[in-house]
Structures are given as C-alpha cells and as structure tokens.
Amino acid sequence: MASWLDPLVEGDEYTRLPGRVRDFAAGNLDLIRRSASAWRNAVPLSMRVDGRWKASGKGSRDRREAYLQWVGASPLLRFVVERGGSTYALNALCVPAAQLKAVHSVPRPEVTPPPCSDELIRSIPAYAYCMYSALGREALRLFLNHSNWAADERIPLKREALTVLGNLVFYVEGGFCADMLEIAHSVEIERESERTLLGRHGIRPNDVTALLDSARESLPLLNSMRRLVAEDQ
Image (cartoon, rainbow, N blue to C red; front, side, top):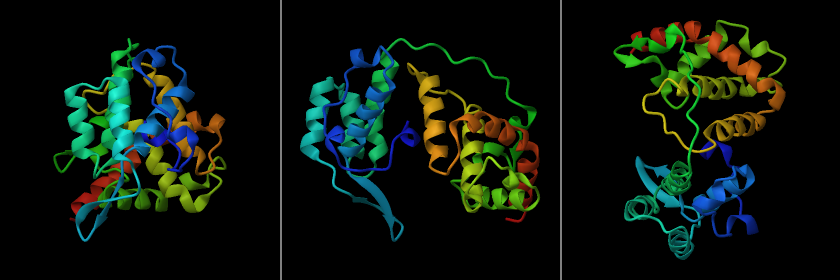
C-alpha cells in the first residue's frame, strides 16, 4: 500500500476525511488510494539522524484526531497511530489496512513458490537479502555485473536498473513470507502498486508482468550472488 501512493505533496485531496469501511466495499481504488494518502499526510515523516529516528515533515495532530474519530478507530488502532505517529508515517497506514481487512476479502490464489525461494543463506531466508539491506544491494550489483539482465529493452533508464530489479525481486519474493495479510481488494491494490512504483522508473504497465517473470527466473543466479556476498562477511 505504501509503494502505491504518490510522493508526498500537499493538496486538497490529501486533507479530505478518509473513507470509512463501508466506502471500501465497492473496491474503488481511487478512493482507497486517496484515503491512504490522507492518513499518511496526517502524521510526520521520519528520518534517521546520527543513528536516531527523528520526526520531520508537517503532519497534523488535530487532523489525525479528526480522522480517528471519523472512522471510529478501535483503541488498539488509536494506540498504534498515536504511539508511532510522531516518528513513522507507516503506522498511520495500519488504519486503512484494518478497514480493508474488515471488508470481506477474497483469498489470494495459491502460488507455488519456486524451489529457490526456500533457500537459506547462513541460516537466513534468501529473500531477507533484499534491496533494503547492504548485503542485498551488493548481491544485486554482482548479479547485474554477471548477467545481461539490464540490457532488456523494457528497462529504459539503465542507471536505475538496480532499483528496478530490487523492486521486482521484492514483489516476486514478498509472497513467500509467512502470514501474508489478507485484505479486501489486495490483488488489485498489489497490481496497481507494482505499476505505480515501477512506472516511476519508466517501466510501461504492459511490461510489468514480463519483467516480474524475468525477475522470478533470475532468482537462482541472484541467490548464488547473495551466497557469495554472505560468505565474505
């Protein structure tokens, strides 16, 4: 859901009251997206300074309180949003996620993971070596250096190949994590998330599926690169 949202900007649509549970039942993705954006804009962002998390950005405590009252947030949701609201905007996205969970959801289709998704590297699942870790990014660089993956004509911005590959791998491997949250319209939101995030790097919507397949087929070689990086530590 977070990767589905546009970069933070101020505007009328970000200060509207968020949708209520009943509003999400019809699966209006624009409404769900606006609602999630409103929640994220109601709290400050966070940044790491000298090894510590500090709040930055505007946010609005009064707006956040109005939102909590408007949707009738439970005490637990209130605690999550208020406790984390001063440091991390993702805490606010727990509210629309909980609202979507309250709407009847259709279970995700069963997907058989490829054998390489079960690999352990130094007793850690291979997918833990992702683009959000130093070792994971180093493995991605090695992969790109040992393959012609970035030459794919569907990747127009070659300088961003590592980030594009990292996001593709993250989407491909994310389904292998245990206890995946089931929410209403999750498949549609996931599809739009992929298109939105990858579109920022010049990827055309019609090319997303093929590139996801390419990333999935690349996992065995990528895991070998991850193993090399891990063994050097």
